[in-house]
Image (tube, rainbow, N blue to C red; front, side, top):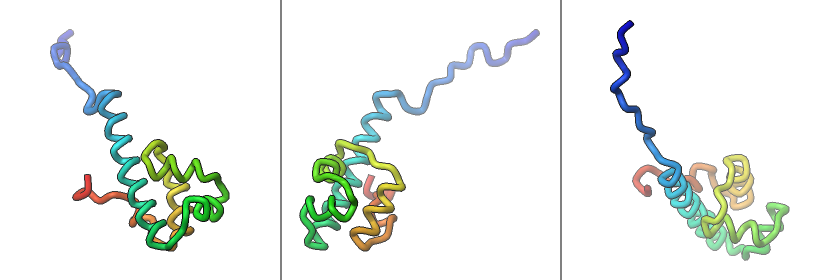
Length: 95
């Protein structure tokens, strides 16, 4: 039996460490956008937290990239900030 692929080394595209760095960067970019839209609407963190039915600390963590939020949560945030969901997600040119 021939083993054609026995010498092929397959490496993951990203390591755990690089994934963590990319996730942190993306979380920070999203947080910056959330903060920009929040300030444009004239909301404090407490006011946005009230609209989201959460605590100020959660808004703080999202805005500072300490928490990588779900698409569902981003949708709720976009509704509270009266913007499109896509407005909160960085484009390829922003990465």
